[in-house]
Length: 237
Ligand code: BV8
Image 1 (tube, helix red, strand yellow):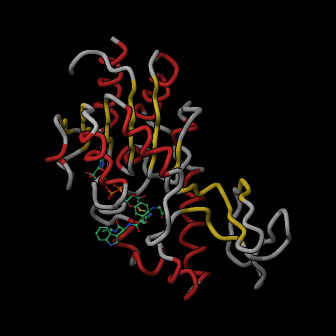
Image 2 (image 1 turned 45 degrees about the vertical axis):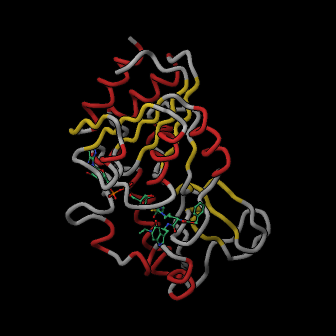
Image 3 (image 1 turned 90 degrees about the horizontal axis):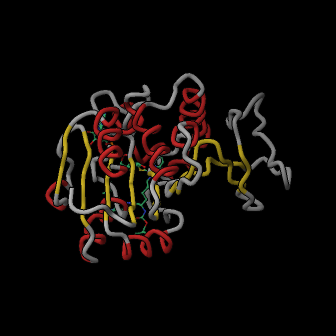
């Protein structure tokens, strides 16, 4: 690792939650093997069959209650507390394990399982319960009472959240670290190229080489539960 960074951007993907027991998308038996992306993670799929999509997200939201953050989540929370420079933690994950692992500032660029978006009044509400219809009735929006809630997640073809803030951070950071992501989905998969173009150091921590490994100056391969605490120790010296 070169000299101590002063401004770090971290991007995490499903791999950081794998050791907590949450399915990734592209592994053996992963989420995209159980369901077709176009059926459960696109606005068209939701319009075609809302109950299928709501059921898919209800199951994932429910599964969250049974899992815990792992040492990788805790290490990033320690970095947030003890690192004297600037840190932006961006996650592609819709789970709440970074928060439950102690991170207070998390940018969920693809939204959150525990947030509901009302398609009538566009209010976002914290949401823990199922969203599927019960006795044929969809739950009411807490604000406008319309039965038109959808998961507050970014589907394919939709605009990820806070992109301006993300690109501004990528332009000014001196270290970009990608953890547990396959580099298969844009614009997140392009962040390493953005950061490099502005002269940042780039580090990939992943179980195996990702689709974007060749863009990283340094790649380390192994489980996030081991690599992330080790890297945080290095940064905090
Ligand atoms: C957009 C939320 C416009 C919902 C998700 C053609 C070319 C290029 C792009 C496109 C194209 N056609 C269409 C596009 C755009 C499209 C896209 O990229 N498609 C892909 C399929 C080609 N993207 C979009 O539509 C995005 N919107 O482009 O809007 C725009 C453009 C620019 C700027 C602004 C706007 C919206 C995409 C968001 C979709 N929503 N999730 C939900 O969760 O259900 S995507 C979902 O998959 C994730 O959020 C993540 O982003 C993505 C990849 O998943 P990963 O997290 O990487 O997980 P994966 O299983 O793939 O990999 C896990 C990795 O962990 C593996 O590498 C594995 O080795 C590793 N691992 C496993 N265990 C461990 C581990 N690592 C460490 N330790 C372990 N123990």
